[in-house]
Length: 322
Image (cartoon, rainbow, N blue to C red; front, side, top):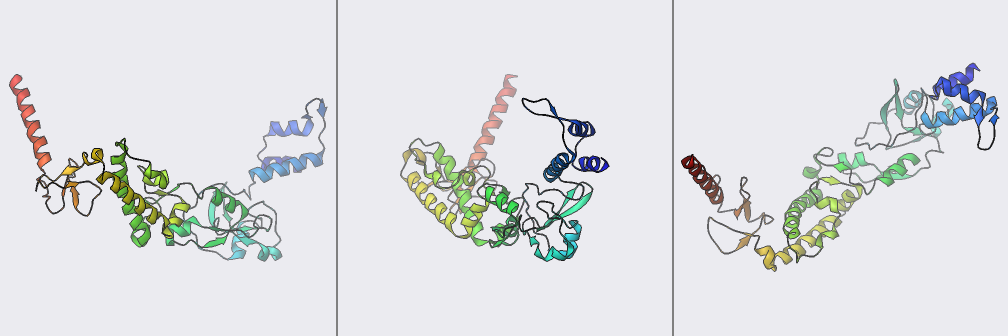
């Protein structure tokens, strides 16, 4: 019928596939079985639920980093074509007050040619669950729990422990605004230097297993929501300090690690210094050698001078041989 053909097009079913569905269906162990109009209508309806239609599309799995301002309920539901954002069920205008707002999916997305506002859900798709909203954490360090749809709850729970949030791209001002986070980032940088030192020591133990591996990797600025919550509670800072103390204690008592330290070539004192001692150590930006902070003179690094001298001597020898 014209209705079925129109419904099939809406569901994204190609004409040839529709004709086959309309005429027959092959079942295991049987011949051709005729399909009634009611059965076909139900199958098209189910496919529409999975794929969406011109007026509605199911929520997509995606991470949202921002928080959008809330619009008037009647305006948003109208833009949703009076359909539940989760299942596409039609809602009469007099019942729109019973729809529930999702704080996570409260934004606009592009679907086909129309903008669909995925915000309001029926009570079957929104049971009143609450979750921490990543956009609120990244924008204002807000770990409060807000009402979300069942789809959003499942999505947010599944990514809670995954390091997906790069603070160099999103939440760029968090470190400057949040004291606990800034302190942890400072500890992270020191631990990265210590880790490189201990990696070459066969006597060191697995101290760094105390922290999640991604926090002391080459991309320490990538966090999970669980990491950020633990920073807020002070747990990660405490763990990082304990790890730092344990690692430095090993270095100070390990001959192999001490052999990888530096002697300040400006003052020639006997104390050994390391790059992670930022309060007393200054590294040459060119050769990466370490010196006392109060001894170092910019552009007068002794090691760089030796390297340049050897290079000139080597170039001179090559010229003489030619």
